[in-house]
Length: 196
Image (cartoon, rainbow, N blue to C red; front, top):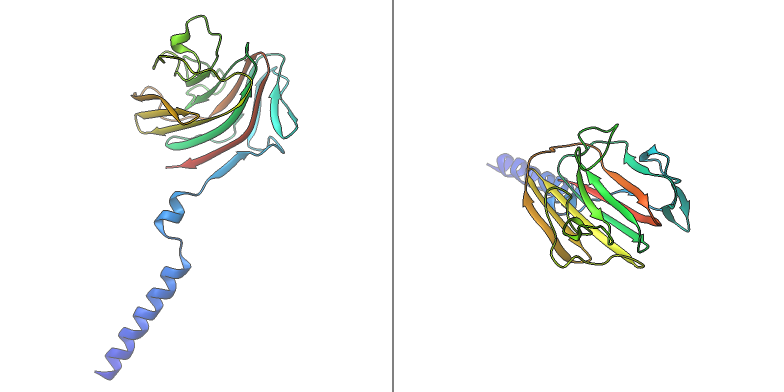
């Protein structure tokens, strides 16, 4: 009986030590991977001829046309990105691109950044061709934060704390993520991802 008690006590103590050494599920759930922190483009490659460069800790482009595309493919995730654009800028964050060689609104979900889009229903805060926006928010001339959640067919976008899209769609299940440059001045300074 004494021996069984000693073994049981040892197992309990070992289990407690193991639990203390392993991160809790809550700790694991909030781990973020930084894709861009203003110092290098190591997690991206360039598509097109946009003049992406690092200026004052931000990825900046103001000429050409193209994308910074992640080297990795993602399916379910939360993405946070800080960005700044001027008034005429046309930009966006493209997710789950099905054709990495030709990213666009017909091969990816395009979370738009385009305050002066002729059809504002697909302007800043919308997902082009999938989810329109009422009372489009204006992003120009200040730092903004996009949070984009893609989990299965559920897509949610939050711009500066305002939920702008909440839809179900399964057109694009996975693919790389891109930061787009179309026109104007576009800057991204912190881009982080948490896989779900």
